[in-house]
Image 1: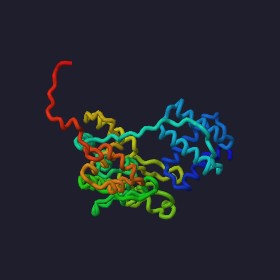
Image 2: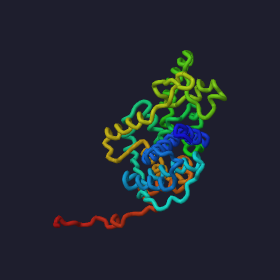
Image 3: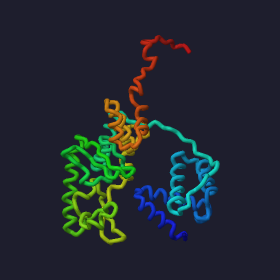
Image 4: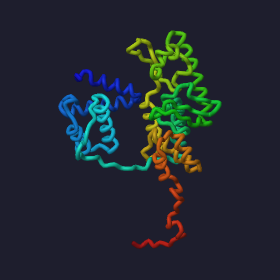
Length: 329
């Protein structure tokens, strides 16, 4: 396979297997770094020794985390097994990056209120859904109007991470402002359609099967970007959803303005959603379903940050009562 066709083959195989655009981009970037590390040699002319050497380089020279090294390994396994159809054999002894099992950062309800209270507009709505529905940031931004059911109080995520649908709760606290937000954008969308615009990209091959669906209100983004772009294939002006970086910057500024010293991000609101549900007595299986975790062990991490501990442990120091102390060293 010529080098000029390698990236095209990666893209074709990723889409044939319904990998997300984000996964496709990450795999492509890792394969580029692997090829660059070995002097731009074609992967077909390399094998187990070069892969093992690159993984060792990541762990020892680049000092990446275990998760990053595993991501690179997944990309290279995909390259050889799927794209080149030459599965890798035994990689031998290479250096694994040191792994850490970190307890997620969780905010208290008052910290969540202080953070969200310093947001406005679309970012306020996004943050409320991250905390109130346990959404991942990209899941929230990729919501379509038809995915929000105000009557049933549900949000349908399709497809979510791992290409699996799931349903989570639509918080009552966000319904009124979300309706107002959508009403404003619906009027703006109607005006754009009258001018010949109002299109959004559709998943898979729906744009071919249902050409008019790109203009339908139900397929519009809940959080659309303020600007349109010209599609390279069709030349039509399209509107994408709000970019993740815009929300991430707003949340970072809100964390600083609220005086929160914890390393809080957008994903911290999802962690807080799960922890606060468990603290209020909800079943862990229910929380697992709302979060979309395939394995219960992934949800179990939140039991380590409950205020009452895993089994309600009380420190023995709290049983001593008022202990006298002396000021002498």
